[in-house]
Length: 210
Length: 357
Image 1 (cartoon, chains in turn yellow, green):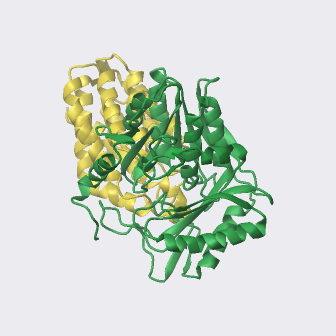
Image 2 (tube, rainbow over the protein chains, first blue to last red):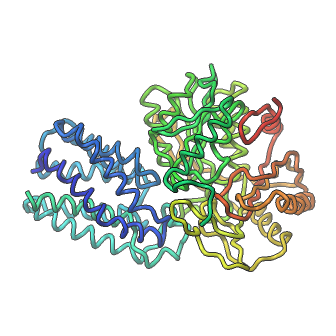
Image 3 (cartoon, each protein chain N blue to C red):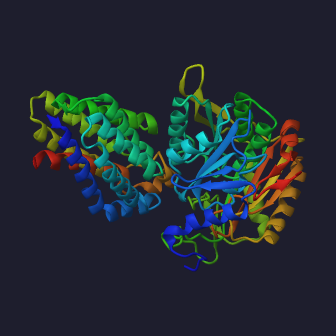
């Protein structure tokens, strides 16, 4: 089960983790992109934090929607619309709810991921956010169906996301600015797959510390 | 790094303030969110033409706001796509009831942000079409990359489509025209030096003193190859061969379908250049190359066109889509018909392009 407060805590923890990993993400982006992913994500979640005050008494859908809007209007580049769409579509899936069952947690994360895939026209193995996010959600779903409680199921999912991010290292980028490097993108971990792992990790930290 | 600037953080704001002050008769600048718009917008009964993209390519796009060209331009941070809220607010400001045409350069961030903006504007009852410009022949592979990048043809499209909008073209006809321009325009760039973004203070890529990069993108994306500096004629010849090479380039572009009420994938291929074609030749500076060198380049471009039987009916020479202070140039050839020539000649009054008024 995930409450409104858990969602708020998740966003706060996300902002903290992204701030801590700002240099790391930007460094990953320097190798195959334009060296701003860490700064962009940090700026986006700082803006999301500012908007949290206005929606903290509202339903989960409204909270997620405000996060999406904050990211869309402040991150820029490709990550802005991709993560923005993730939270907007996740919001649509759980619109007026005050709390989410474990199944609904899977549902809203999957809805966000599907929205992100459609926005980016991305396939697994293109060396993108999807390569850590999608397998992690599948793992979460399977773990929940097998009867694991949410925090335990999430642990497996985060582990899978971390693995997915690492598995982007040998891949050739097929999307975004990195794709122009072709074979030269091999040997570098995808910054987007890495930030997606951090966002899921923030949810795990939230679940474990409540 | 030596630049005429105050703090790296306020470079963009200061430059936009200056643009607005210098050209208050033509345009105004709105901040939070940032967009540049025609002083007389919304122009009654006219389709509003909007473009935008990362800053650092001036005069693109803000310098093309005015009568006969763009109704609004949305500048992002330097080399970073603008955000949908900018595009959406700009659309609301200039929309005159006849719809919106967004001209979008083919970069992943630009394409997605403009798609979201179009969705937002459509939700408010506006009719919106996004047409993508992807003319950079340095990218040969559409399947395993983000595809050809949008470069020089963008300038020509904004002029011709802007004139058509001024002449009263309806949205669908305007979208068809813009699509036609994109398929008939091809470009290739090269760099003698990298550029330095104010934020990073470092060169965008490394290039040895005696090295050049052929096929460079306007943000310093990798080109076709690096080579030692050669005589200008040889460089131009290599670029022109790539532009005129009649290879089949097919790509899938995402466009809005009114019938299906959704985004659909549209397959498109370039028609070849043929003997007897009329073209607009556009020789562009990346920012740091002087106009004198551009004329040296143009001489060879004209010679090659002559040999190949392409007739240069109009030309544009100067810094129109730049990469901050990068030295280098790009060449664009756009195959034109009578309609496009007439629209090219139509009056335009913007900070960067002005004729017939």
